[in-house]
Image (cartoon, rainbow, N blue to C red):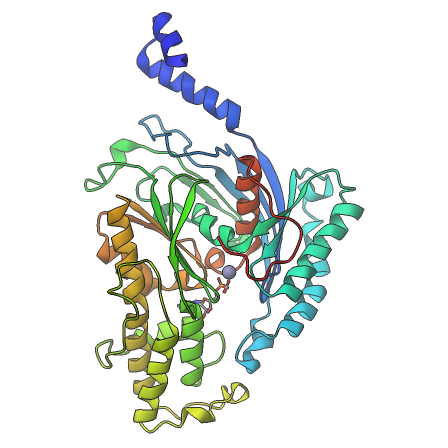
Length: 436
Ligand code: KG4
Ligand code: ZN
C-alpha cells in the first residue's frame, strides 16, 4: 500500500522501502526500561535493562547497506547476581530451603543497590518483571513476593508487574551476545563499562563487510538450543516471537549429567566447568561412552544412561563410587588424575555428540543459518566449537558467561518482548514445571 503510494508519487523504490520500514518501526517500536528479578534456583539477581527499537517481528526486516536496526537494541544498565554456589556445594546440589532463605536475605541487599541508580530513584521504569517458573517453587515465591512488595510500596502500582518464563530468558539471551559473536552483523556497536556487567549492544548491518561464505544475513529461522542444569531443549525461532519447540530431554538435563558425573569423580557442585577444564587434558577417545538417542529421528535427548555408563566404568576400574556421598565430595582424589581427565573428555564428547547432531539436522531441515545457545552449559567452549565445526556456514551465537548462567537481564528481555508484542503475560504464580 505504502509502496504503491510511493510509486504513484514518483518516489524511488528504495525510498518507498525505507519509508515503509520507518512506518513499521514507528508503529511497533518502543523504548522500554525494565526492572527484573530472578530467583528460580541458586542465583538471586536484579537487572535494569533498556530495550529500544523493540520490534516484535524481525523476520521480514532485512539488513541493508546503510545499516538498519533489525533486532531490539539492548542496554544492560545494571546486572547484579548473588550466587549461592558455595552454600550448596557441600550438599552436592541445590537445597531448596537453603536457597529460599538465601534469596530472602539477598533480595533487599540487591534492591538497596538498585535504588542508587538514577532511573530507579526517579522511577523511570516502564515494566517490572519477575521469574515465575520453571524452578524451585519456594525460591520462585520469594522473588514474586518481593516484586509484589516493591510494586506496591515503591512504585505504588504505577507500572505493570508481570511474570516471566525463565526458559524464555535463556532463549532470548542471544540478544546479550557480544559483537564478535555476530559475524553477520559486523558493525554492531558494543560498549562495555565497569566489570563488563553493563554494555550497550545494537545491531546494524553492513552487507559489504560480510564474510565471503556468509552470502545472506537472514537471522531467522534460527535454531535454538537451551542447555542448563534443569533443561535440554531444541527449538526453532521463526521470528523473534514465533517459537516452535522441536524436542527436549526425556530424563536428565545435560547440565545435570555434568553435575552428576562430576560428583562421581569427587568434584564439587556444580561440576560442568570443572569437567570442561579436566577434559582439555584428557583423551576423548579413551573410553567409548554411549551417545544417547543420537540416531533417533527425533529431536529428543536422554542423559540418565550416560551418567550410569560413567558409574559402571568407574566400578570396572576398581573405584568404589558408592563411597562418594555428597558431603564427602571435597575429600576426593581417590581417582587417579589422568583417569579423571580421560573420563571427563570422553564423557563430554559423548554428551555433546547428540546435541550437535540434532542441531545440525534441525538447521538443515529448517534451512537455518543461525544457531543460538543459552543456559549454563552454553558456557562450554567445546560445545560451541563442535557446533561451528558441524555447521561451518552457520553463525553460532553464544552469550558471554554471565548471561549463559542465570541472570535477571535475560528475564527483563523475555518479559519485555512478550509485553511489547502483546502476547499473554504469565500470572504471578510460581510454576515449578513451566515449559516453553
Ligand atoms: O543455566 P544455569 O546457570 O542454571 C539452570 O537454569 O540450571 O545452568 C547451570 C548448569 C549446571 O549444571 C552447570 O554444571 C552447567 O550449567 N555448566 C556447565 C559449564 N558451566 C556451567 N556445563 C558444562 N560446561 C561448562 N563450562
Ligand atoms: Zn537457567
